[in-house]
Length: 407
Ligand SMILES: NC(=O)c1ccc[n+]([C@@H]2O[C@H](COP(=O)([O-])OP(=O)(O)OC[C@H]3O[C@@H](n4cnc5c(N)ncnc54)[C@H](O)[C@@H]3O)[C@@H](O)[C@H]2O)c1
Image (cartoon, rainbow, N blue to C red):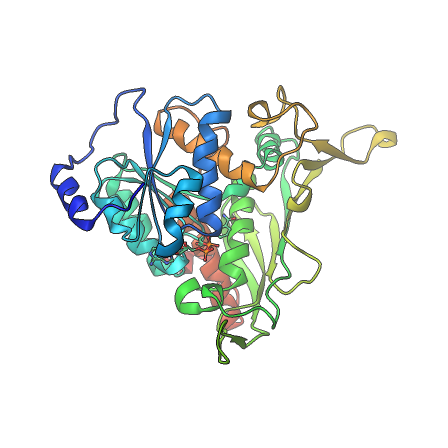
């Protein structure tokens, strides 16, 4: 359990074959992960649990974790079962023993890390938003196109894989709502007040944006995923920074907090539905309130992450005396997506299960099997990034922006 030296990494590089064909069936999928904090923990858990709960076509091996926090990395690696750890993330690119690199770092480094891994022939699973800027996101999409089938890409839009969201996706594919009219989505948190000290999340050069890239990214992805439609126009948007300076922890200094605290916008989908999106980190009492509702000509669906096991469904075609919202608890192994891999009915799932479900789907996809619901790749996440960019341009220019204006 030791960090390998860069020299060892270079020796490994000399041996590295460029992987052009998939490995034979039964070969474990060897993972490298960059980042060891919030997402580092969620992803380490996901990779280690996937093979325990899902009958996967390939075993998963937690090969090497990389992060900057050298002092705590060894203990983290031991706790989560990583074979090796290193403070130099480039070692993952040089290591022929790694098949997939998982990028769980702040948004400003997604591009550099993802490109290095794709260039080295590794599959990449990157955290959302795809990048802090549209230029970075475009470079990542282009690199993924260039890599083609040799190196696949995935993005951790984990909420797609809450069983209730996956069930909503199935019901929409069955056309239960008919023609779609409205999407109403908000993602509200309350932790970002003036008392919260400076971190990368409040610095534009590191995060790209604030609540927008952090939270609107998820609900724009969910809206595109559920409806299966693309946004065509942003009709108007509003962005505001309420907290302009924040304390720098451990010092008496403050620093500029130069990202949005909230962004709201109105949009249209290609099929004609209208959409409302709102993200903020300044809504006390909302902890992780990721909420989406879809209204169609025959009924409605809604999901709220703080009750993540429930999907609410209103069927306007039921006899009038029975009409009302159904609260479907999505834990039936024989009926609900992902549920068969977990617990008996009524034994509910939590935040971490979305990540485990996604890790399992990535392993399936890399083995030629079908994921339970579609996985977002860089191409897909780039479309979400275009919507986010259009909303920012709309807010800055106080005007409507057709998506065709965003390259
Ligand atoms: N899918 C989700 O629900 C979700 C939730 C939270 C965060 N995220 C995303 O995950 C990413 C990471 O967020 P987080 O909350 O885990 O951040 P964090 O601050 O908790 O952890 C960041 C980690 O990245 C490492 N790191 C930073 N810069 C690095 C560099 N240049 N080289 C190597 N390692 C570096 C740090 O050492 C740390 O371990 C962001 O893109 C964020 O938007 C997604």
